[in-house]
Image (cartoon, rainbow, N blue to C red; front, side, top):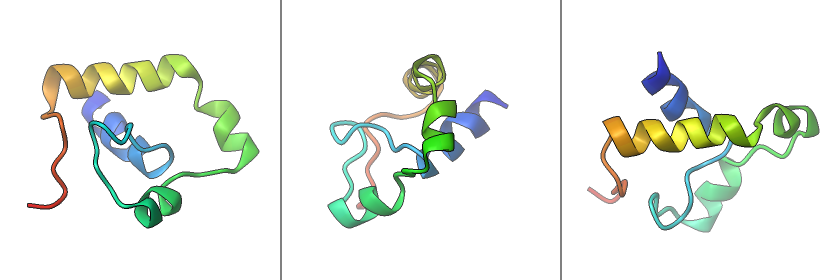
Length: 65
């Protein structure tokens, strides 16, 4: 379940550019600016996402392959 969360939250708030290199257009499209969703994306959830990527998924993400 945690891996699904970590990956799916990328459609709300992408990982930082240094670990997920994506063009500015894609970053804009995948960054939600709705105030309700932004409020729900609390720092502890983003830290958990980062932990799951660091521990169980491959970083940096290479979208070009």
